[in-house]
Length: 348
Ligand SMILES: [Fe+2]
Ligand SMILES: [Fe+2]
Image (cartoon, rainbow, N blue to C red):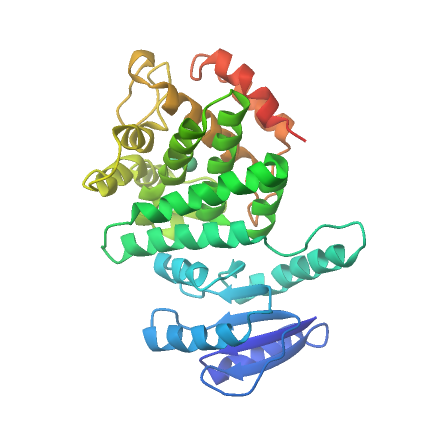
C-alpha cells in the first residue's frame, strides 16, 4: 500500500521507512513542502499538533488531499488535545506509538481490499462518523483549552448519529464506528447510537429521541479531564486510577451546568449515568426513586456500549454475551427496560 508520510521532523523518516518497507511504499514529505503526494493510499501525519503553525500547514496539505479517504495520525505525545486536534483535522484513525503503525496499516489495507470486493460496502468511514468525531473533538478540545463547550457541537454529533441510524440501521452504525474509531470518541458514538436505537425501539417521539441522544452524546464529557494514561489503559485500573476515573460524571456535570441552554435532564444524565437502582452506583449513591427514566435508559446503553467496544488489546465482546451480562445485573437496572433492550442488543 502507498503510505504518504507527512512529518515535521526529517529524522523520523528513516525509521518509518525501515519499519514499513518493502511491504508498503513510503512517500515522505516534510510539512510545508510544496511537492504533491498523489491521492491514493493512506496519508500518515506525524507532527507536533500542539504547534499551531504546524496545524495550519497540515490543513493546507489536507485541503489539497481531499480525495484521500484514510488519514492516520501518529500522536506520539499522550495528550488529550493532540488526539482532539487530530480528529478535528479529519483523522480517520489514530495511533499512539510507532509500534501500533504496522497493525493499523494492515487493518486499513484489509478494509480497502474488502471494499474492493464487488459485494462489499464502502471501505471508508462514512461522512456521518467523520463529522460526528469532529464534533466530539471540538468539544473535548474546548475543555482542554479551558473554554466552554458549544452545545451546537453536541447537537451536530447527535443529529449525525440519528441520521446514520435512520438510514442504515443500528447494526451498521455499531460496526462502522468500531471499525473506524477508538477510545473515548468511539465509546461516545456507540453509546449515542445505542441510546438512539433504544429510543426508536420503544417508540419515542423524534423530540424524545433527540433528548436522549443529547444526554448520551454528553454523558462522558467529563472524561476530557481524565488523563489518557487512565482512559486508554489496556487492562484493569488500579484503585487510585479507578478513583480518578470515577470523578468523570461530577466533572462533566460541573463543566456543563453553567451553560445557558443546558437542560436539567442532560445534567441529570451526565451526573448520574453510573448510578444503580440498588444504590450501589456513583457519584451520589442514588436509589431507584431518585433515578429518572432517561438516566435508566442511558445507563443500560452505556454499559452495553462499554462491553462491545473494540480496543487495541482485546476483541469486542459478542452482543449476545454483553446482553447476558446486562440481564444478570439483578437489582441494578430496571428489568422491564432490560427486556425491552433485547431487540436493540441483538439487532442484526
Ligand atoms: Fe461514564
Ligand atoms: Fe460512558
